[in-house]
Image (cartoon, rainbow, N blue to C red; front, side):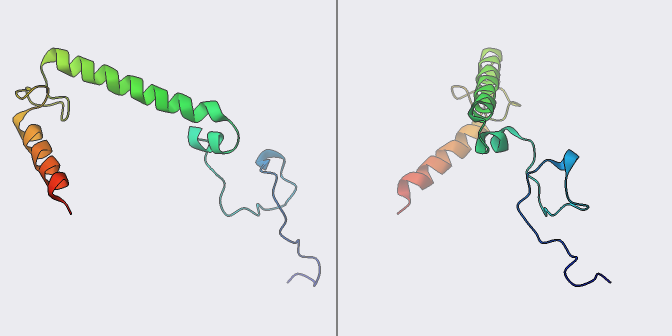
Length: 103
């Protein structure tokens, strides 16, 4: 049992876990080291670079599949209707029809 008054009050953490001043961590959750959280915490380029990398990868995949004549949506079947296979083109037609008729 701890004596009254010896228990440490919860204060604001400085998130320096390697040099923590507390005997046990007071945080229930520490944010992961991902580009989004870096951006959120003041590193604006990290998240933007991640988005640009994803766009470049998607554009390269689209061009590669289009040149090979493969469906750009599923990447499995031969493209028949433009750049999509029959199944993906039908799914797109159905979803567009539902979107247009939705009230």
